[in-house]
Image (cartoon, rainbow, N blue to C red; front, side, top):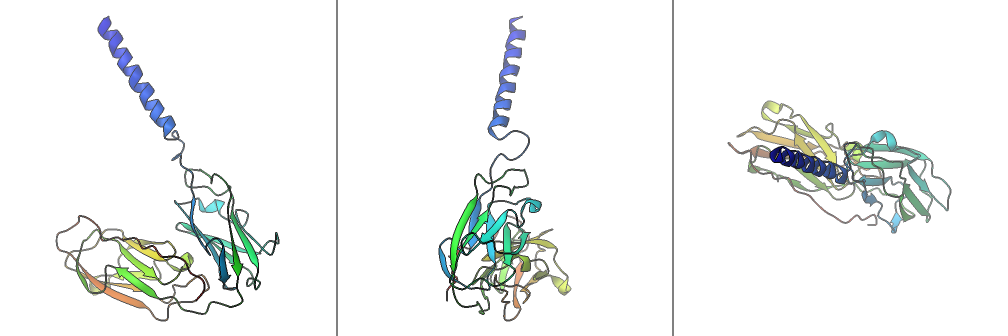
Length: 263
């Protein structure tokens, strides 16, 4: 009898512990954590923003694209005058494209409302707002490639590596895709993969990994553009070689650069 009682007690304690952990983690209906806006372009309080710029907000996690639209991504200026435009969402980034150029020397307010949600249905804790001032010029400068991982002609790249590229300025995520970030292997066979743009950087993740002792060519085409619509001057091409018999570790790196609009 005592053993039977003790067994039931242990089972009850275990069940209550599991239930408590589930509640603490947000239950079974989602990940339990609210998404955040991790960066914006322009930055908050930025000045001399080119009048032909788009406005972008990057989230801390993947979002439900159907919740990101002109009702949840708002831009106003001057004052509370709404700016007409369109909204797109790619990867982790939402982009607002004004229908017309920004007005010269004007204070604008951009807002991401709590109606945006992540893939688990969690919303922002509160509306996210930032302001910036437009300048009196257009951005006509072409973006450049600052660095790559792996570097050009690098040998012995681990076969589970990701490819990263850093740009000289914030890029339009709608233009950084598998159509503009290309990787080919032997006999120019295309490497299948996914591309994620995070503003200043883009990452290509091969679907099936790289092949050892194989030379690869990576290309960023002139289809890649900044937030003002300026493209690379020419295709940027670099090569590297997969390492024999290694699938451990990763050469993936993150780049962090301050956002600058004025030149």
